[in-house]
Every structure is written in C-alpha cells, then in structure tokens.
Image 1: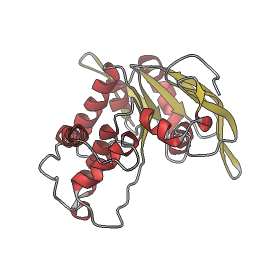
Image 2: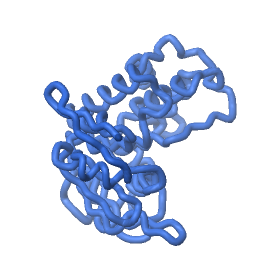
Image 3: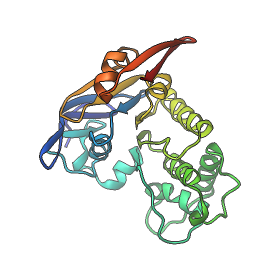
Length: 259
C-alpha cells in the first residue's frame, strides 16, 4: 500500500507503551538519505523498543511506519531486509560457527532460493570484516570471541547486508575507545555516501561528534528531535538524564560533562 512519496524512513504518531507506562507518545519523524540521527535517553525510556518498531518487528500502540513511502507492515520481510538492517543490543550464539559463516548471514536477503553465494557476496563479506578489523578472524569460532570482537562481527554482518538504512541499538556496546570511534566513523561515512543511520547512544559527546540530528526520549511520552547543535545543550541534557550536565568549550565544539 503506497502511503507517501519520499525515499527513507518515516514514522507518523508512533506510540510505544509498556504496562502502566507510556514511553513514546505520537512520535513524528522523517529520516532521509544522508542523515545520521542519534537517539539519546537514560535506560528504560524506549530506545530499543523504538528501533524495533521502526524495523517493523515490534507491535506499536499507535501510528505507523513508512519505508520508502510504503507501510512497512505491508512489505515482505525479504524486501524490508534489502533496505533496512537492525543491529540488536545483544547477540547470542548457541552453536559453533566460523566468523566468516556468521558474517555471510548478512547476504541472505540477496540470495535467491536454491542459489549459493557468489564470489561478489564473499568479497563484500571480506570487506566488511576488514572494515571492523576482523579480517584475520575468518576461521575463528564465534564462541571464542570476546564481547567487543563479537560486537564488531555483528556490525560486519549488517555491513555485509548492505541495506541503505541502518538501525543501530548501542553500536558501541563492549567496544574500547578506538573501536568506538572506528565504528561510528564507518557509519558517518555511510551517511555521507547517502545511507540512513539511526543509532541509540549513551554518550552525548559521540552524538555531538557524529550525528546530524538527535532524538531525545524522556521515557514519559515526551520526545524532542532537532539538529544536534540545537538539541545537545546543558538544559536539555540535564532534564534528560536528571543530573546536572555542563557544557565545556573544547576545540571547535563542546564537551558535555555530568557533574
């Protein structure tokens, strides 16, 4: 069912509840090609639930989601997977598998039934592993990876999927400072090349550095979205996290410090 004309991701009056609590009330947001949007808020305000709803895998209490102008619920899941990838906050492995076999899962939406992956598919997977510094791990068992290595493998898997729209639930989870910056640079470059990135983050400084816009979720239904430089200010961040946050001028921008 066609409901719009724009390419990208759009939510209209999206509402998310948990028992006894409205987390997000009537969120209206449109994200277009080339944008990196950071989602900020304390624990339990609905960041993960909102990303799952935007991916079309969680029921909403109100509103609807449009993907490239079509209601996401009306689209076959394979078609959605060709355009949109979700990085979950947690990844579990129950059976042994190599790093390469795991990253190749990202190519499944591109491979027709009864077909095998091509050399191009394998090359895309290898390039994704190289991007996250795991190209020497192809034959490692995923059950032997550290938390940070497993997180980078999950990121490589969605890079291998090559969807054009990336929904990232705490992509810096378990990562050391170097790999945090490396991963966010990867997705900043993706946005610069015309992809869409929505990422939930806990660090306002990283959001300020990499995001074009920020969505603040307060957990009581309220939300604010706007340009990063307008939204990431002491008053807003102090209200968001219920703790004083000071703005400290640093180089060409600002640092945000909880005090």
